[in-house]
Amino acid sequence: MSTMLPPSSSSGTATAPATAPAQEPRETADASEATRSTAATDPRGAEARTAAPWGTDPYANALRNGRGPLFLRRSDGWLLPLEVERWCSDAGAADLSALHRCEGPVLDIGCGPGRLVAELTALGHRALGIDVSEAAVARTRRIGGSALLRSVFDPLPGEGRWGTLLLVDGNIGIGGDPAALLDRAADLLSTGGLLIAETSPLDIDERAQVRLDDGRHAPAEKSGPPGPADRPFPWARIGTPALLRYAEACGWRPADQWSAEGRAFVSLRRPRGPRRPVRERSARTSSQSAESANSTPVISSQLER
Image (cartoon, rainbow, N blue to C red; front, side, top):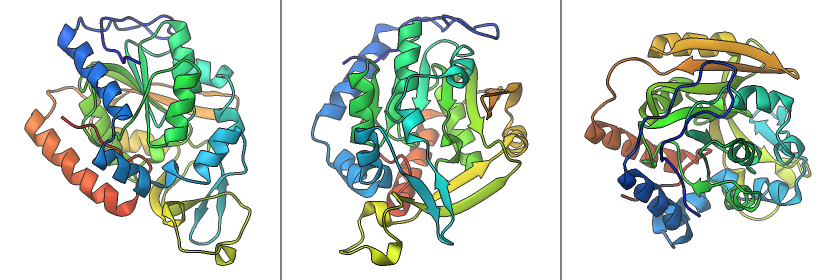
């Protein structure tokens, strides 16, 4: 399955769409090679799939079954329900309120089972999802989307050329550091590119160590050695006010904010000014990849160069 970054424009927007810049054949070749690499045996990718909690049970089981229960469990026992059934359904009205704002080629970070990537493809967008879960990537491809087993913090195809990034379904919490995630997003977007993020409907700014839990057994009741899904990883929950504070500090420009079906969204424009040199970005992302491997992040697979 080939991925994309040929010339593209938005197919339906609530804001004025930006036409994606013309791109050279080499970019398409790079993206196609990235897709082929996911099917190859890759020691770094295999290590990431083993280490990452989202690539193992109970998350993979929930995606394969199309239903929960599935939770994020804090160390104090508090549970955050995850909406697996909605993720595995078709895109709803709230999803479409975000997708209709997309401009140019779209990267869905933490795409899960792929409903947004598939819908964007049906709408005529060039869209790619990245996720650590093999089950998520397989399901995305099965329903007509393109997806790679990749990390947002590692080199990705089309860096600096994406028209829109999506961080929905709580994915603004990836890595437990919204400022670092915004910084990485600026590397990926084209000049004037758009970030669409879903925030908590609550006015919160919370960081915590969590783990995946299917709610079937208390931690003390589980038998056998702990697996990747049992290890805690950093996560953040932030509302719109908190995201806007982080965005302002990082130089992002607010574009829009809205609510749909009880869900809250914010769109931001990429900070002005040149991106960091590739060498500096590569060193930074390599360092973050090493740190991520030690802390079992939400997304931790790699793209070889």
